[in-house]
Amino acid sequence: MKKLKRFGVSMNENLLKKFDDFIKKQKYKNRSEAIRDLIREKFVEEEWEKGKNVAGCIVIVYEHNIREIVNKITDIQHMFSKNIISTQHIHMDEENCMEIIAMKGNLKKIKELYFTLKSLKGVKYSSIIKSTIGKTLK
Ligand code: NI
Image 1 (cartoon, rainbow, N blue to C red):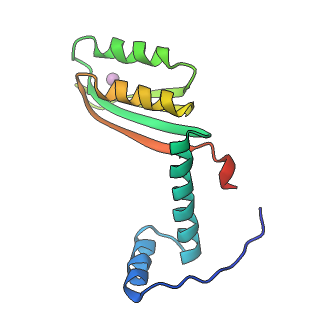
Image 2: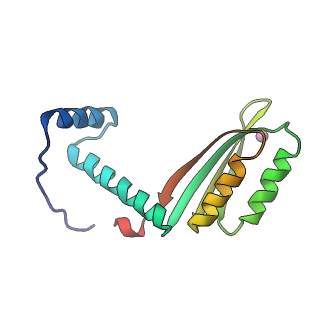
């Protein structure tokens, strides 16, 4: 672990009160840990947009009875097999399925897969979790 350095932060009382409420809700033990996480989050966002060391997770929920949707989702994923690490399929109820697709590598490919899946007829919900491999966060 790298050496820790201390620094002072000044802010107005109202903002600090909001920050302390946020810390309590998010179950942080102290302000330092919360500030470190917020800074890391910003760097992850920046890394993500630059497309460096990108990783991500796509979540889709769809109705499996819609014609050909299961085959389409499988065919599309095969086209991105170099970037997909794993796929998890969850049968949510009689009609609905959820698929969680973990990816890494090229940002363009990850976005392309996400937009292709989310625009399919029968996909009711989709979301993407932006992450990085974290090489620059040490
Ligand atoms: Ni299913």
